[in-house]
Amino acid sequence: MTKGSTQKAIRRFCMACQGASSKQVAACEDTECALHPHRSGEEVADAPCPSHRAIRRFCMACCANLRAEVRGCAAREDCALWSFRFGCTPETWRRVKNRRSSPRPLLLPGFSKK
Image (cartoon, rainbow, N blue to C red; front, side, top):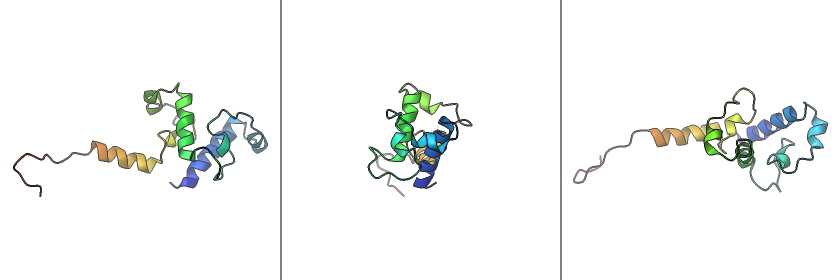
């Protein structure tokens, strides 16, 4: 997924939040929402943080700032932001998860690494 897909996910979420009305999305007054600067679905130069970090902030706020709740979020089918809830793209998350959970070679003293 590309950076644009995070923007599209934010746009889909905002459209669902505002009743599928692009005029209401543009007129949204909820400036406390982490997604507010990104609601147009386009890259924003003066945004306080990148779009994937804004999604992470929004998900943390949605889950009462509990990381375990974000990890176990059950809104997979209902939320356009679910795939980006860790603050990165799903591909990046899979790579990190595989790297952390893959078996590591056992290095014992006196044996050379092959």
